[in-house]
Length: 467
Image (cartoon, rainbow, N blue to C red; front, side, top):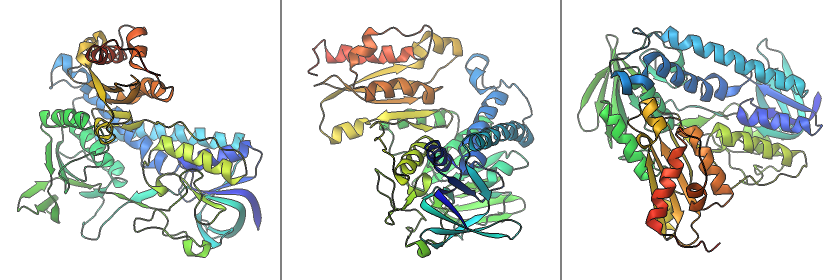
């Protein structure tokens, strides 16, 4: 029986960051990964594949150039599923190679196999060849991630009715697609396939989508989707889904029938905890397989067992999962863990991108904070003209009392990169004057910050900050 200071189950963003952090502190660390290669969901079916698919689709379709050359413009006239997969495989190989090198450089032990608890400190690992190992850890970090929710009433076949993991293995691009679920994953894939000129219909029982995003940003985003003929059937539910003659027929709760080439079911994910034998460790997951933790230390109700990443729920971002894993590992091995900065960015890699940091206008209203907004549209920047951008919006919210930035919200090309300027100002408690008085490279999309800052400053008046 091997003994370790920290056993990490899962090698996704939370697991790998936690393992490397503990190893850098001189601890003996073991990572257990049940997948064929290290990297977890993030590398193989989630973050990296979906973003690679997006980039490939935009490049091959000529999407970014259509503002100049028209909607009929294409870089490659006939785009196949194999075209998309070729770049994906190259990217995944690189990600795995980097991660394996990081483990080797930091002397992190890792084995392939399915892990489950024998008791609170002992885990059984069943390898592919049937060999069974037992390992013990002074502390254990569960970073097992999630898997797609697959309800019994959906006739999944991996070809015409798929979940988000199976979508990466399709053999042909569909001419039409229905996406069930208007959450982040559903919206990302729906807009990616729409950019490839697939006729996409998005269905969700809720009458709204992306409720955690500033409403004005969602309205702008929604307008762009409808403008390119995406069908948004919100407040409607698919009650029956049947496969027939290579097509899929959906019956909605309002009696509407839709026939399509492919259905992507992307309505939620489940924590991948069902095979861990949690009861043997004194743990219990909720009805979605998620674990409850202390939000500051990521410790479960069993003091030496921690959980981080998507398995603990919102925000379920690769970026925040990495920080959760790092903090959990430091606490687990007895090191000091500083609290991360208050504001972190949220990125949605749809077409167009959405990124946000800080308070939305709705949250500012709920807190009864006197405020003013500044707006800039990408077409107001010279770089926007150069890039042929007709759309894109940056919104900042400032306190009228302190003039401090409260939130930054962006929809458009490069939103997930641009947001970090606002994030830095937020965490450093900067004011509207930062954007008005500073110089930005010209021509850049980042100039939108100055335009939005001036817009807010003009509305606020030149009143001295009370900070």
